[in-house]
Every structure is written in structure tokens, then in C-alpha cells.
Image (cartoon, rainbow, N blue to C red; front, side):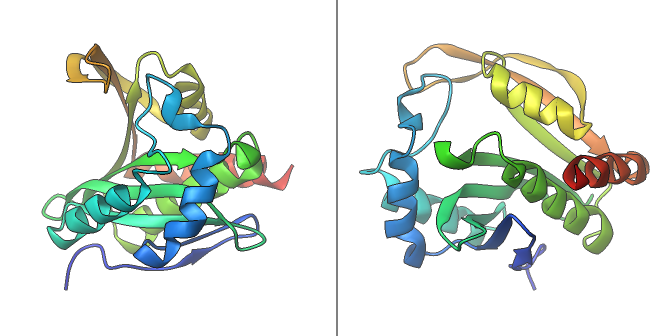
Length: 194
């Protein structure tokens, strides 16, 4: 069996279910909310590119390097995507990334709950030794959200990748390690109860 196996994770504000082409119409509508693909420092699919993005993620899943999820809001509407990526089955490490959300759910409890469910699954079911997050240096909103989760900055990979516009991206690498999970879980439980 592949590691990790596809799974559905349910919370109060969100449901994470295995991504499929059946999500195409809903994801196309979700990406229109906020036109996030126009931000130069993100890699959010455009409405026209949504099918190719779903197929790309499913292709990486077939190779064992990604487990993509559709993010559904409390009403069951598509609200975005997230993944376990850069999967290392030998050392039991995953990165949570390639995440985007429709504008209507940004700065709500949805993101925190999604990250909580993914980390709880990674540490408590998959027995991961670490969960990693990466984002571009100029994506301040993402960096702040990662830091609010309790992740620590491991470092910055200078000139690590290129953005779609050709400029070089410095990648900020964050992580939470297994020994930190109990405190991070308590912090997130507190945040979500407020």
C-alpha cells in the first residue's frame, strides 16, 4: 500500500477529502474568488488551468510523492486545495503545502482546522518525525499563518526556485518535529476553541 494512503478528514469548519476530477467545477469556482492566480508570489491555478492542476497533483500521487486533498467548507462547497507533498516514506516526513483557499474562507477558522487535521494525522496516525512547511519570502500572509501554527523557521533557501514570472524565489522552510507536537496541539486546540 502507498504511504500515506488516501483518507477523508472531517472537522467543524472543513472536510479534507481525496482530490479527484469530480472536484473540477467546484475548484474552478473557488479559484475565481479572489483571483489568487494573479498574485506573482503564489502558484494558484487559474480557472482555465484547474483541470491540468488536478491532473498534475493526481499524477504526483500515482508516483508516491504527493497526497492531494480537496478542501470543502462547512457547507460542503469547494474552498481550495492542500497536500501532503515531498513525501518521505522511509524517514516518515511530509510537507504540508501547495495550499490555496478561496478568498471567502481566508482568515477564518478553516485554515487552522485544516492544518490541525493534517498534522494530527501525520503525527498521530502516520507516526511522522517531522512536518514541514515552505513558502516564498515575499508571501508574508503565508509566513505569518505558518508561524501562528507554531512552526519554527529552519532557514531560507536562497534563489531556490523561480516564480512564474521568472524572478528568483527565496524559500522559507519551517517545521514542527514530533517532540513539539503535544505543545503545538495544545496551542491549536486553544486557538480553535476561541
